[in-house]
Length: 256
Image 1 (tube, rainbow, N blue to C red):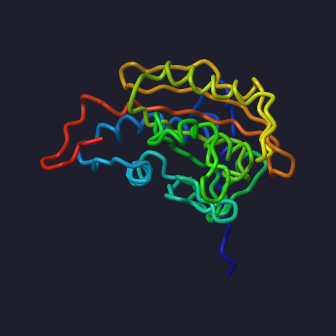
Image 2 (cartoon, rainbow, N blue to C red):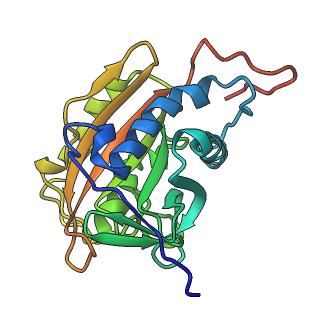
């Protein structure tokens, strides 16, 4: 007997107005991420991490564990392969053989949603603007979070993605202004990577959850020709990392 092919449907929904549980898998995933970010930060068993890679791995482990009960139609994969040799920080895959998001179908091997994460501020001065744009010193390839999503190097087959900001200094309103200022600086500049920037790329007004010390925004971006999707919505999910709720474990190194 032929194996039955199961499909999970999850419409993209109203991306700009915020996630709604009734709108499909992508908005449910966004709502799940918003709930879990402060829970991960405050988890007393979370290992102290002083690198972006370690933070991403820890966050992925936590999200994958919580999804078993809170979002069972999705699984989380750290460093999911993307274009060429690139990997995205976290790929979110369906648990059925096929997952429908709008008019597109995703197999178990393809993420229907991707998540890129950056520390704010960046760990080095030469990576200062990497949340938006950057260039690898060795290869000359693009390293910016928004930049790679605009170019289709990350999330090339999705039309919605997320960027997590690990805020380690200052507060969300500061970074909202700074990031939009970096985008302003790119408008009208000829870029070797093919990215074309406009005021439409700027982050929309920010929503701050003071109780959970998190913040949320969204930005809409046109992609270059040749991308599978002509535009992408990026949901910006920020978490202030110096939460007083988390007490380091005995013997844990808390040095920055």
